[in-house]
Amino acid sequence: MVARTALTSRTFPVVDAGDARRDRAPLGAHLSIAGGTWEAATRAREIDATAAQIFTKQANRWAEREVDATEALRFREAMAETSVRWCCAHDSYLINLASPNTELRARSLESFRTELRRCHALGLDALVSHPGNFIDDRPSGLARNVDGIVAALEAEPGPTRLLMELTAGQGTVLGSTFEEMAALLAQIPTALRDRVGVCLDTAHVWAAGYDLVAHYDEVWSHFGDTIGFSALGCLHLNDSKARLGSHLDRHELIGEGSLGADMFRRIMTDERLAPIPKVIETPKGDTPAETDGRMLHRLRAYAAGDAAASVGPADRE
Image (cartoon, rainbow, N blue to C red; front, side, top):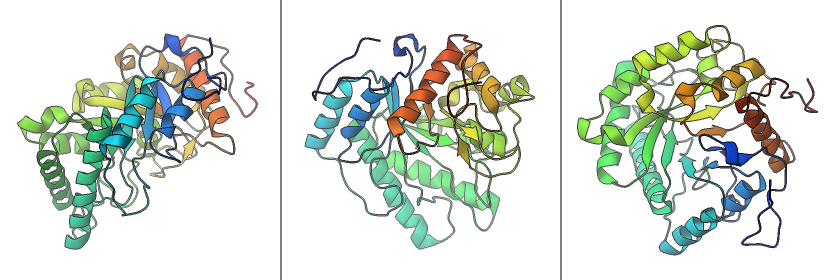
């Protein structure tokens, strides 16, 4: 691929991440915003990403912030110099709209609303959010979660689509079954329904008990019948360190975990999934750009039908 230069004197991409010009849908990685949200653009260019996911603040802290016009413009201009054509954020891990604790739920709602405002200001396509933990009673927790989502969307209109992420099902977390996620979506008022969809994480649904290895077509048919492909706004492509049905959220490099290379080959050549943006959240190690680039190269090889696409720590079968 021809290298590109802009914003800095560096030459991009800095790693061989495969031919991004052949991406049928946006493909990329979760990127650090260290130094400012606009710095995600440099990291996207390093791996020739056509999709990107970011945090808009520190995900493990309650401290909130607003995005002013200067930051918004700098971010948008920087991203325009990349190949990225779809960008989302992931919200804070602390948010729990399903909590029965009045104080925690109020704090969560304010944080969630602020997250939506930042996403709208940055012009992001989507915000990925985990359903909360019900703690006490599952139906009550689901109702609280829906009420929080509705309140936030009504208070914060804007272009960013909310994508509720299917979970691994650990503890009292909601949203680990297609049926429960469908029930959540069904309770969103019709006027807001087009602003909400789902994100499916391959490692999560595997850990939740959906066998994408032995029963790939059956799982996707079940998804289509229960939730519907029109609701699918993003795929998180992650292999798993965990076993099927373990309810453990443990990501692994593509093709090197319990899901394996063949499952990802199927995803990358599945016509039903061809238009869906895809983002990796795989371990980055000590060299994030090199590792992410290697994973994108691997996925692009799968999409191209390269049966010999390598796997393993040294990219060897």
